[in-house]
Image 1 (cartoon, rainbow, N blue to C red):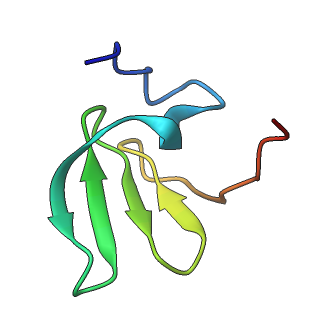
Image 2: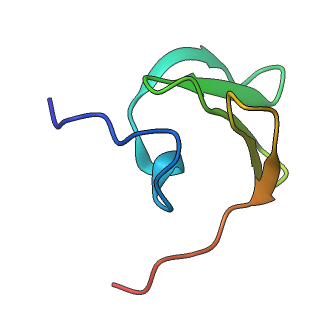
Length: 56
């Protein structure tokens, strides 16, 4: 399994899922970030940001 990015990194929302509540619209990642299915994430420090697509 790849390393878990820190919650303070710009790619923090790419971490792997540890708790899946997609039926409720959210998942919790290994770094404590919560990703919502509306395109936002909530960091452990309480700030929320939109998830930006990464060009491949």
